[in-house]
Image (cartoon, rainbow, N blue to C red; front, side, top):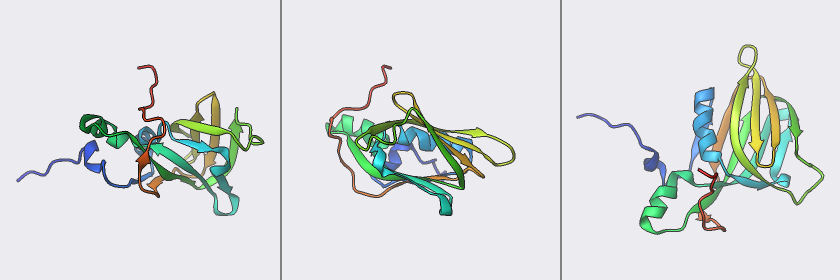
Length: 160
């Protein structure tokens, strides 16, 4: 008896709880967080805990194809994106004084530095970037609510 690897679709009905400790893991996490939207007020840097967290409304990419095949509407779910070991936070193209700003996450990437240190880059639509300088890469993405129908009813489109 051979055991098959898990497929992307195997997780379609389960809440995500993923961790990334290297750049390869982070690519998977980034693909699942792509097109998450969140109000600027949902970002927190807990300097004493060296943690940056954001509550996002994540598009459920892992379920999109199955929803389409079954004639269901696509879904979003609230998820916590947490980066640990954060030493410094900087942003570019983000107006932190605009409390009504809604941001859209395009990618989460790691730029390696010395040893295990480096920068986690949260790239946002509209040319915004949040740079998190970390002592070591440790990122988690965890669904914290039940899925809900995506308000737009559409799969995000990047012109492909």
